[in-house]
Length: 260
Image (tube, rainbow, N blue to C red; front, side, top):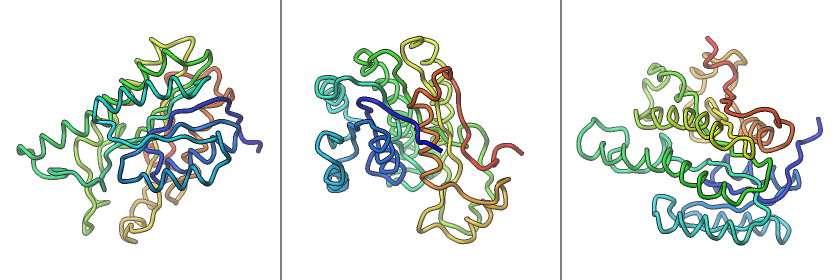
């Protein structure tokens, strides 16, 4: 199947992560250009990504999206240096493996602090970026939010029994909010900008226990975990004109995990 074509610049958050790197590579391969961002600690990964592409295909700015000053500067830089600007992928998020004080603990002061931090990065930042960048989008632009199966269904706790993995409340609640934000943005940004969401199920990665992996696989219809490529292909569909009559949609890329 011919890969969907993408034109012009796409802003991509969380670009140095596993999924972010796959999305960036596919955008460039499809003819687009990437303005990437991730935390300072991943500056080396961002620099290596830039070196892997041809000049002019990839730019980056490293910083903390939860820092409002950096967020404002990012919007300003992207709007000035990346013209024409055709889209945004809101991929950055705190997830179960993130290192944050109070993450996964009982609802005491530390956990509430973590809750607020997660809600800000996972939900408020996508809103601010969508509003700020959309003023500089060309017509027929696209925003893609990265949701999760846990924005749609409650956790199945037997998946985690006997493992060190966690599924904090703030993660699922923030992703549920992001799915609803997708619908809301699609209504106010139409017809110039389409807004959709891709909600992955479990993505197979190094470090997962075989116990967790097998339990998860048994709960899917397709009897497998997802790959980064399978999720990135769904993102590319929404970025391209192949989805030109689709907006306000949440696409589950979960092998049937939520279908039962």
